[in-house]
Length: 143
Image 1 (spheres, helix red, strand yellow):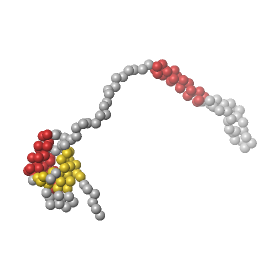
Image 2 (spheres, rainbow, N blue to C red; image 1 turned 90 degrees about the vertical axis):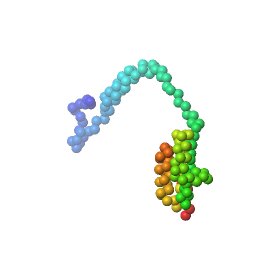
Image 3 (cartoon, helix red, strand yellow; image 1 turned 90 degrees about the horizontal axis):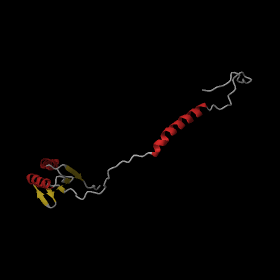
Image 4 (cartoon, rainbow, N blue to C red; image 1 turned 180 degrees about the vertical axis):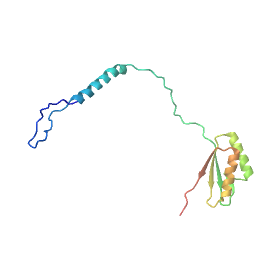
């Protein structure tokens, strides 16, 4: 709160002249509050609490999941590597792979001219076999 006198100067136009004194009361109030905060928190800075934190290891996993790359060519033939599969035989092969490794990944690479029916057949066989991770691969086309 500013304290001033009632006898302030007036200029020739009859308006009040600006006060030339700096009001330091808010500055002193803020400084006192900061001083109290530092007095209270200073003893707390010297005390410490020991905390046992768990140790984390960032070593990569050694095991890789089995990857089966299923290729469907333009004639709608389904292959894994060089071996050709029918729908029933593909499902049986995928079941065996899932029995060996639950984390088996199926990567599906279909030709541009492949019918959707062949892709849907492979996806259905993978679902029935219990394959949880399926990825679609593509090759950049030429113009």
